[in-house]
Length: 289
Image 1 (cartoon, helix red, strand yellow):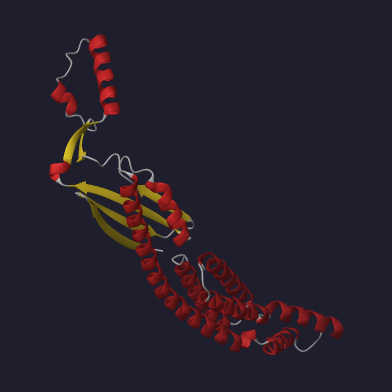
Image 2 (cartoon, one colour):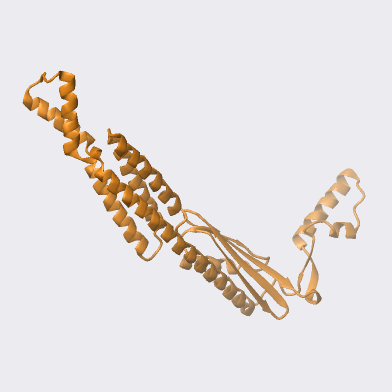
């Protein structure tokens, strides 16, 4: 499910923004983008996300800002040491004149500008930031829930369409065993010119077998059952997405069987429309948590 939320916060000259975005996903996958020194917030964010959502690819971003007066220049000691080592090696091996200090400091990643206290947050500040993360995830979950409610309405309309098509299929001559039997009898009579090449008992067995193979009553009954199960699922609490995907597959399986059994144009046409409607239901089910 898709969703977006943003929460702003501030504390003693330091300001921050938390943005949470989500898109469809089979499982729950949280990716956090946190400033250096704020890694302790990630476990809290993962626990909070798991408590609120069951599926989706979620991106959580924390951006820290501060007043210019409270900003300081920092040297990334690790990056600076690596650069010095490279310069020393090249100077000794190739005789290259070493660059000036200001040239080294201009290299990307060596010198950073940031808030004076951004890299070492205390417990109180971490707690306030964690509260902002939780608020963002709450807002994201609410946004996803609103989208889910709209999707349920769409799915309900699709189920109405599928139910109507199943009713039309059930009313087709190709779904009536007695009609199928009468048509077979007429066709056989035309082919044999009224003469029976086998005994009446064998003739009755073969006709019964053909009628049984063409009978779609069982498929229609299962379609009705799956539609009812899907309606119950949409009305229930929790995250129905995975089970809804399974029911969509079962509905499509029965529609495929109905089409393969059909020997009557009207029933085949209804069956194809049914497959299209069920496929639309299956696609929308992927958007539901």
